[in-house]
Amino acid sequence: VGDVLAHDHPVLHRQSDKSADRRPLSALSRPAHHRLPTLALALGRRSSKTVAHLALALAALRSGSRKQMPSLRKMDASSLFKSEPNPSMFGNPANVKDFRWDQPNWLTSRFHFSFAEWGEGRPSYGTLRVLNDDRVQPSRGFGTHGHGNMEICTYIVEGELTHQDSMGTAEIIGRGGVQFMSAGTGVRHSEQNLSADNPLRFIQMWIMPRTRGIKPTYGSTTTEPEARRNQWAHLVTDNAKGGAPVTIDQDVNIYVSEIDPKTALPFALREGRQLYFVCLEGTVTIGHKDGQAMLDTHEAAEVSGEQNLEVSAQERGAHCLIVEMAA
Image: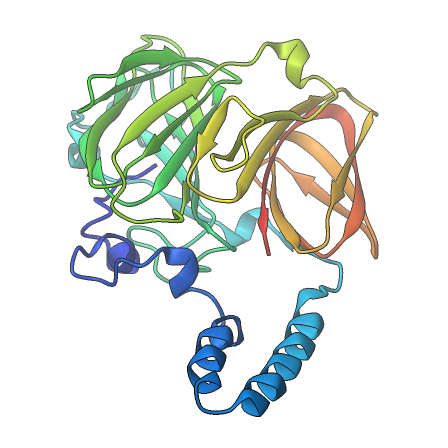
């Protein structure tokens, strides 16, 4: 979960520093050869021959860089960081033994990327900056805290999440639901498990936005179990394209599925795209171009290059999430 202010976290400082360059992040992060046309235009005032040579070099460079070799890299559960913050950090009373809860701390959070106190992990994958797998004790939660200049999507795996924010939104979202905030110029919110008996588990994803300083917005959607059973439910997409109930300010798609035991589901990864795959529950085998990879609960995989994947649930079935994006 976003358990530190985006403004204050050193790793996230570039996304929130108001004094920073305000060009779209997509422009700031482009490789140098993608910015060569500007140079070519400038030189063109002096020499059309130079422009022609640069154009040929640029075309060759882009042609060579676009083609990705298909690959899959597994993230074992042991590669994730397990965070158990002090309950007072988010306005909770001290930990006490509770028959409804099977952990010593009020929160168990698994970080897939560097976050908060963990600075040794991977910094990001594409535009996916944060993916935290959070499990919260009954009657506990995250008190009001702030975010800025980040697209934040939260998928509910278990229990019910109660959300309130400074834009006046208040709602409860259950399993299979997703909420988003375009934090933009700044928003404050709280995330609580108000159930007296049931744990809450959710996946929170921070996606670097296309443009900084936009007006904050909030939205959510729910899915029926049948809509995600043995098929990919398309929950989130780019607001420039549409086609899913939730849209955000980045070229990212989020899919989920609950797959029956011994059932396979295809997913086609196109050229120029990549994805981050998370096994939320159960066990799944991913058949890819170079073989197979088995993921247990909490484990993940980075997949890139054009290839047709076959996602097969094992004896217990599987609940899976895909974050697909430009490479």
